[in-house]
Amino acid sequence: MTETQLLVGPFNRVEGDLEIRLDVADGRVSAAYVNSPLFRGFERMLLGKVPMDALTITPRICGICSISQSAAAARALADAAGQAPSVEGEKVAALLHAVENLADHMTHFNLFFMPDFARPAYEGQPWHDRAVARFTAMKGSALHGATEARARLLHIVGLLGGKWPHTLAIQPGGVTRAPAMRDKLRIKASLRAFRSYLETELLGGSVEAFAELPDRAALEAWTAGDAGLFLEIARSLDLEEAGKGGERYLSFGAYPKANGPMFAAGVWADGAAAPLDTSAISEDLSHAWMLGEDSHPEKGQTLPDETMRDDAYSWCKAPRLGGQSFETGALARQIVDGHPLALDLAKEAGVRARIVGRLLEIARTQIVLEQMIDDIDPKASFMDRVELPDTGQGAGLVEAARGALGHWIRIEDGRIASYQIIAPTTWNFSPRDRMGVPGPVEAALQGAPVREGEDTPLSVQHIVRSFDPCMVCTVH
Image (cartoon, rainbow, N blue to C red; front, side, top):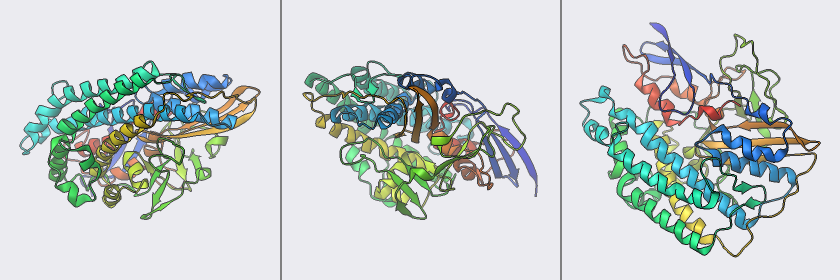
């Protein structure tokens, strides 16, 4: 058996810094060690600040998912105050959040993931010329259509949030802008335009038809649009078999409303759904350059180990739920929500499943957004007064595009005494825990083929990008 080691990184077309050490034996990855090499320290920046400063500081963690950070911070503050935002304000906050997540999925598919298949390494494949024409960086016809459609979609955030990214529109008591009937009409027009793009380019067919696909057999028959091209590529490269995960999925629930989130909260493990017990979350520090003890984020600290001890290899902590690693993201949300196609894809659990999970969520989110705007009453109040306590604690649990995002705040004497954040990429790109169990991406990379002469294996790139890492969100 021939054993070698590869150090892969930095990765292009991912958000932030990422480095992966691969042990390779007989042409396949035998073990992977994922490193988040950039410590950022946002949790430490927040210490001693007045609690409302979290609304300004935490969205700066990331320019791609800033509304997700805003929503989590606002909900953590509201929870600490023991209050809920106004009903109509919560609807607008959910609409803003869903628009950002939808735009994020678009960015990932068109700009981060699909350009890999335009590489010269795939010349000779029957689909390669079409992939080059559609997805070549800076030139592909799909990229122009997608960026234009995304820009029009984000006009909704400009209208309701004032700007994107880093809007301050979402507050503990609701939102700062009450939409008028004219605003509703403009938003509906933007959503109609985006639907047109989805149905003519991305999906190549009815949004409802894609959202209602019942299983993998029906999915195989979908040949239209860029989705159809991806499915053809996936069959050719066996992407349904690549990057298989641990088949444990987690969702905090997306887009709250009076009778529960629009996409359900919960976990999926051992082939069955189960309730989510957030008290079972802990952060393992055994392989992170962090000081302190394993703990729930309510009691956690961010104390960087400047010695960078030898038994650790990442600045990222290792979140675990009930001692187990969990994958999170669009596929996880749709599985936990019980969508039949997603449940069938859970049996596959690889690269293709994750990408189809996003495509499925794009279709379902478009429908959800159209329902959201119809349900907003311009005559109602969009902001309730919230009095923050001098002492208290709260949690804000939301779903960013990449998955479960949690903020935990503790307030003492009117100042932030502790602020802990677990981002989706912290879950997915975590290092090993003290039992030696790899994080979701580390596990998914085991068995990936490494061809002779590859220093950044294509198979590894496909698997990594199927998780859509946002490394700047990972380490705080």
